[in-house]
Image (cartoon, rainbow, N blue to C red):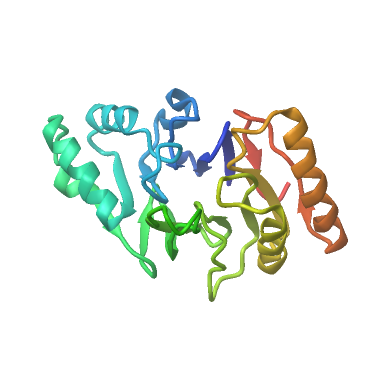
Length: 225
């Protein structure tokens, strides 16, 4: 299995010449991320995780492409796709909740969590799903909720967000205890911010015998290597 990070939270997952994309948002270059994929997984509705225009164009251009998202968001995308004339929007855009299992691009997927991390009590909390892919890779979306009943080999760590505290991020990574940890959700950080986050997370990971490293944007990385 290979993964490619596209600037922020968007990850392309490739295995056996098949591919899917997670969270194609507006902070990521989506041309390459969406090229030739069979499925899109969306954790939640925020624009940095779903850029609706390019996704609708991808659905219109590839009649075999499917999309999975939390139920309320899936309904919104389905209505927009139908209005845009996307063929078979009803059959290709699927609403899922926590505890679901399905196959996408030939990979086994399970869903976990349920809600976005709280930013502030005055702001609405939206649905959020974490996706566990092929028994190896976990993308939590915008949440520190620890999935139950699975052993994660590779964790995509949300490194920076309005809802995130570095101490909670460290604790989340430590509790999951994945052998490999790659930072995502860091598109708003400059080089100094990235170095600060990587320093904290890398130091704690090393103390716990875990691997933490930044993967270059746009470059395929094999899991386990």
